[in-house]
Length: 488
Image (cartoon, rainbow, N blue to C red; front, side):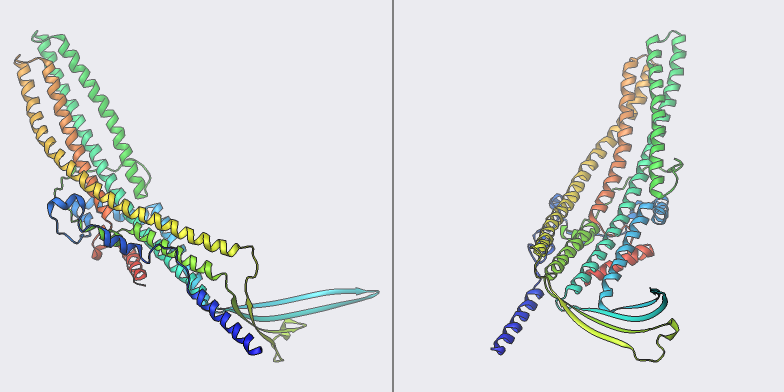
């Protein structure tokens, strides 16, 4: 009968071990990323008609703008931007949490020293008693079910997610600075156009007033020209404020005081070179935000394993060595030491289903995060597709408005010459000037939109804004550590 009980106990323990080792997973499939990569198209949909065969995306896109001032500002911002500094501190916090988690591989050793003095009064007798004691305690939890290993794995995944998040924060900062720089350049270029137009109108006004005094034209032409001059001067004042706003926005990104002193010394560049887009599946490895979301999903799944194993017994070893005496100096004087070695098992018996509910909650959290991850991936696909199609539209519009600008400038000059010779009315001059102004303004804005779109495509494709050899050391080290975490 005793043999049967031992067999039953052994079978129960074996069953518990096997069930604990088979930790549940909340994922709908073993690797959702593999399924996405297998089901994604070979080329971007907007590129199908071009028969594109590009399978790689070249990093180092910042160099394509050929703007040393922009590169210097970005290098400066990487060490001065306050939000990026905060994100780097968050990365250090995640690293320390990983260190705390990995400490469970080793036993915990503590030292306690105490000294007390007590006064006892009985009748007319007063006694004083002094006690001193010292103890060294060691505690170690045996990771029989792998719960501690799962906790360490969860911490490693959270650290990898923090690394990817920091990379994404860096790319976002570079993207925002690039956009702000070109927005400032556009604002300054438009200001120069408005100022030039105001000066031209003032010269026209002087000529029209002179002709009016000679009786060659009507007073209406003078009033209309004065009206245009005042409107243009008001537009100049408004644009000057826009330049200040754009300059302050850029200075804030750089981590400087917003003096509104940043200025661009060149016009917006027009870049018509093709962008190597690669294939959609590459987004899963290139986009740091997607990687961070994936690591967070894996960490939650590891947390589900921890919640599952919380329901099983825990095994602890406790060892203690101690000594006591009447004085601190008497401790460890060579006398016999007291010691103890205790092994204990604690297991939950009844908790009204709390641990089971916590496990189910962890599983539902994993499932929720998986759906959010899938939504993020397909939204990333949509962002690239939309940016590509938007670039095609912007390129066509730029070509048409470029021709319209040439025609409008020629028509403006011709109409004013004909007006001075009395061949057309001043209304014709006003209309030609309006069209010329609109065309020039639109070309500047479209140039900036093409640059903004180019940055958005690079950002949506992910990867490094600099080539690996020229990356800042701090960013390169994070990238290397992140790749190591991926390999694990």
